[in-house]
Image (cartoon, rainbow, N blue to C red):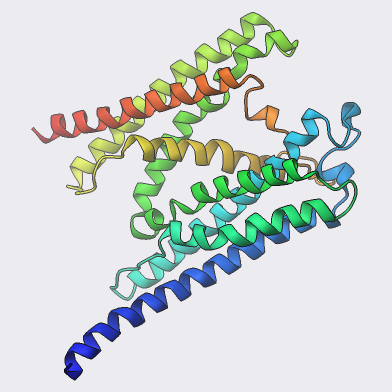
Length: 310
């Protein structure tokens, strides 16, 4: 084997090792942040504040409090997503100043390396610290929800690093899908005595119409802007649009609620009932409406691109 052939094989191997090392460093940092948050919430902090023990008669293991436990995973994932986006935006701009292209780590590789420490660490923390400790099924649900939320949190990192404008447009699409994901479920509230039938259906109908109008406007402005600047960027796919809606609805909003919409001395974690339907059928219907709308918007983008290009 010649030295040239040997060196050509060594360089890609060294590059791959460097990339995996970088991915590992990101995974270690993210896992440390998430486990640190869980340790604070479940071991150090006052449970009567973080999870509102005793509020309106809430007990440590009633349905409302149980929902707060696993919602902590979405709050933590939302915090990771904000930090992840800010870092990759800054890194992308810094590298661009040197007229180079920033290559962010592959998000699913980071997620895979985060999986073992979080799958083990979150149950250990929640089942051993403070009082009362969580039973295994509830501790496992915290880990599963956190890992699901983390997958969505890491996904937009490469987008904002390489094309911040595309990430901004996705955020606008996500805002448009948010009413479908969060407000259509209001139809179930009258049966629980939480709203009148008229108000509930007005909220559901208004969310549907408002969402469609907003998304139609955003898709038109986005496609028109792309045609004006001769952008070669492809139209968004339905999964991308739906993922953006999930990020805004289930990661950003729970985090913002925890940080900005709770009293300064009572930074509690919201219950799942504020974001998810009580009835699984209603929740599935909300997701189905959001999925159908995402498909419609993706096709509308393609139609508008063809129309504006002629």
